[in-house]
Structure formats: structure tokens, C-alpha cells
Image 1 (cartoon, rainbow, N blue to C red):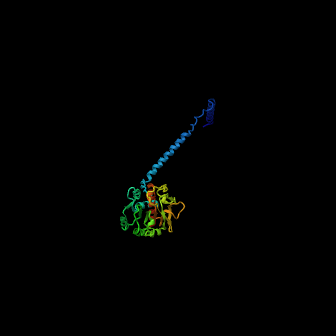
Image 2: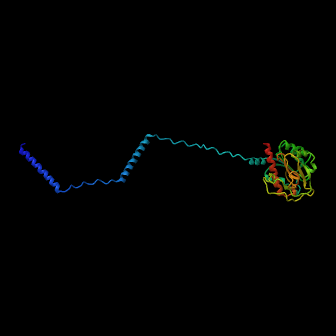
Image 3: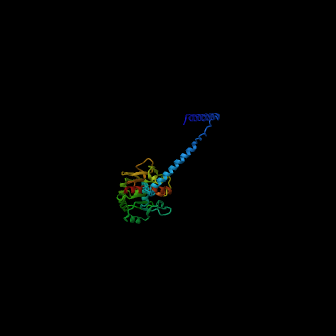
Length: 317
């Protein structure tokens, strides 16, 4: 290309550049581009949570495919210990033994108005007993070979339990540990007889005749003979059925004898009317039941029976 041609090209280029500059100046500043979209934080958060949840579901599905199905656990066996056995208390044991005791009762109060009070007491207590008002039958029962837990001699009608009866009864008390309750107003008449083998072991002896019925005072009011199972009764009030005498006073001579009630409040070793001895298995009463009120006497006899049988079974252990 010649020089003239190059000059034309340069010239045309210059003209076009100038024209372009002129157009840009006349049109003013270029318009701004559209603004960037506004940032929405809530939308972004929801999208992120949705993404995370989707990832968790996907992973859970993969885990479910890879982990084998587990068998349900076997049922839990009840290994709880059985309830403890309830052991009866000593009181419950004694009560059961008393209910099953073999009792031989002799009571000669059979003529109206001298009605029996011992028998209804045994009935009230629900005891198993053999009962007689015949002195011959009494001796037969004593010699029968039966192991009696308690022998009751309630000789109030002035018939005589004496002599050979005590030859049979005394060994049962001393050797077999049999319990014994004796109601005997006439100890004066037999004190030096065969009964003495029993009273000497008991630690009591006849003191003097009690002229007439009178109030009886408890010397040991806390003793079970006056509290268990009955309490609140008294022998200070009397009826005076018998007119000949009020019984016999006894005194302590040794052993484990205790006077529980007597004619005077301040005499613990003499002028006794109720005494216990021989491990508490024996009771001697030297006044007549029917000289006092029935309800008081029956309460007292229930306590006699409970006291002597309790000590009888304790001695057998």
C-alpha cells in the first residue's frame, strides 16, 4: 500500500474515534445496571434446614438398609423375691397353745343357787376341756394316763378332795410340769395330810382360819393374775354366800411362792388368800368363789387359767 492509502486509513480511524467520543459525551453518563437481588436470610435458613433434613433422611434410609432387623428382647422374668413369711409372735404362739390345751376341770358347785362358774369361763375361753362334778370320775381321769396341761380343783361345796388325790396330782405338777389351780376353803382340815407334799414344794402353809368373808386386797395389782387378759375388777365387794367361815389364811414359807392377794394390804408374806408358786404354774385360792360377785370371779379365773397355762407351756420349751 502506498503512503497515500495509509494516510487515508489513519484519517478515517481518527474520524470514527472522534465520532464515538462525541456520541458518548452527548448521551450523558451511562445508565447503571440493574441492582443485585436483595439477600433473604429466612429463606436461606429454611433451605439449609431442608437440605440437612434431606441428608438425615437419606442417611437413615442407608442405615436401615445396612443394619439387620433386630429381634425383640425376651420378656423379663419376674425375679422379685416372694413375700417374707410372717413369723407368729411369742404371744400368738402361747395363745394358740392355750386354745389347744388339755384341761381337766373338777367343780362341785352343782346345786341351785350354787351354780358352776368355772365351766362357763372355760366355754367363754373356747378351751378343750374334760369336766366332771363327780369325785370318783375325777380320780379316774387323773389315772387315765392323759397328759393334762391344766388340772382345776374347784372344791367349794365342802366335798373333800384330799388324801390319795394329792398323791396323783403332785407328781404331775413336779415331773410333768402340769399347771394346777386349786380352790380350797378347807385347807385347815387337810394341811398336815398328803397335800403337804405339794404345799411344801410350793412354799406355803396354812396360817389360820378366816372367820367370815370380807374384802380381799391385791398386794401386787400389776401382776398378770389381775391384768391379763382381764383388768378393772375387784374383790373388795362381797356377797357372803357361805355362813360358816370365810376360808383360810396362808403364809409363805419359801420357794418361789408369792402372795398376790390377802386380808390385809400391808402383809406380803402372810394372811394370804391367793398365792402362786412353782414357776407360776400353780395357783392356790383359799376362799370360796360364791362369796363374791360372779363377773369378778369369772374375770379372775380366766386370768388364773391364762397365767398358769402360759407358764406351763414356757416350762415345756
